Amino acid sequence: MEDSIEHRLSALLDGETSEFETRRLIEEINKNPEIKDLWIRMNKTKSLLTAEIDFSPRNIASTVMEELDASDIKQIKFSKDEKSKQLKYYGFAFGFLLSLGLVFQPFIAQEEESFQSTSVIPALSIGISRYHQMKAIYKRSVTICRVASRK
Amino acid sequence: MNSEKTLIKLSKEGNKNAFEALVIKHQDKLMGSLNKLFKNPTFSEDIAQEAFIKAYINIGSFKEDSAFFTWLYRIAVNTAKNHLSSKYNKNEIMESEIDESILTHIGIDSPSPESILEANTLRDRLFQCLNDMPEEIKSAITLREFNGLNYEEIAKICNCPVGTVRSRIFRGRQLLDEIQISINNEAKSNNGR
Image 1 (cartoon, rainbow over the protein chains, first blue to last red):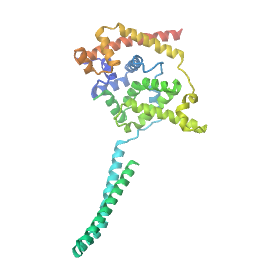
Image 2 (tube, each protein chain N blue to C red; image 1 turned 60 degrees about the horizontal axis):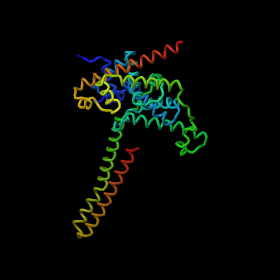
Image 3 (cartoon, rainbow over the protein chains, first blue to last red; image 1 turned 30 degrees about the vertical axis):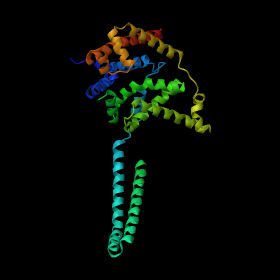
């Protein structure tokens, strides 16, 4: 046998209803003023028992909802925008690194040639300095991307 | 899924009814907390209202790594501070003074004696009713409301099924609601005289 609406409302107050039950209860609260009043009273009883309030405040829910309806306030969509923003910056970082790689490719090829023609030590030193340069550029680009994604 | 998480999820989808349920659930606690801080019920109500509207607009940014009330309370306190900063800016007072002189600038406006009396009368009657309840209902309500235990934990302590706990708590709430209805009716008849 299914519990009464009042019974399930009590469970909702305690956070003990399933998603399906919660959805149905919200519909019920919205369309039935008696159920809405009961929901308000249940919450007030809870607040008074647990000493969350020391005076009798007015119910501001209706004012808040009227305000939201009257000014047609829209929610800011965060999650999707944030993800696309992040993807944009990762794409930018990848493109930047790729272009750097393409720019430095001829120099690396030259070094490989010089490595073949000259002694080992100068070639090694060129290689190491190039490696450090590339590392610094990579670090800088990662920092730029991080700062940009934070903004 | 926890009911509150469902309410938040639905609110994020733009369901205003779900958000209204959240407002009703948290309004007393928020106004009570703000009033403890600002000692001004009118100011606290205005700030709570604005905070709920901001919460609705920005609920997409709520990452659910903290309780909804904590997030809401932070919005409310920041809203209050912004209100006071604008006041201070006009009066050319340093922002660092906000916390110290907060009360002197918004003014201490205690809740009306009627409002305090109403709350106290209702609270006394509710506690009286709680004391008169059958033992198994009283312990279920006490464990839930004052110890914050969930139904499963209460069921283990009371050694009964979760469904029984749910029914006992509901029965207790019905008894408490009867008290509130009778007090509301008394107040209405007094006002009518």
